[in-house]
Length: 109
Image 1 (cartoon, rainbow, N blue to C red):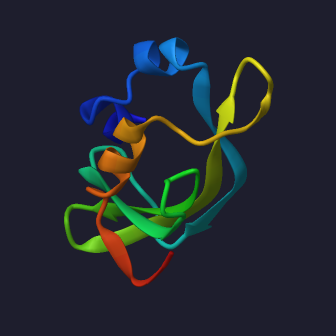
Image 2 (cartoon, one colour; image 1 turned 180 degrees about the horizontal axis):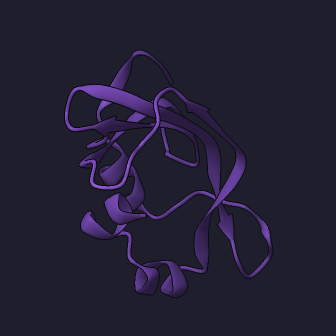
């Protein structure tokens, strides 16, 4: 959600366009323990995305102290029209933002 906000996909924009992200699947693979005081960074990568950014899969890597992979979170999602409660094509700004997300080595469109 931070990435969305930073790239113009704000709550106000989603309300104005009757659209919001939905998650079909979320999976977390824990690799190492995160301890109190550890510096944690999250890196976002796109693993799959339709051309219009209507459906997508993302990977979040959680790194401890810049050198240890602590967890990998995989999600599959889409955009839903909140008025009719059906999957929908997002506004163009979503496609523009998704184009900025780094892609995985095995990115699949």
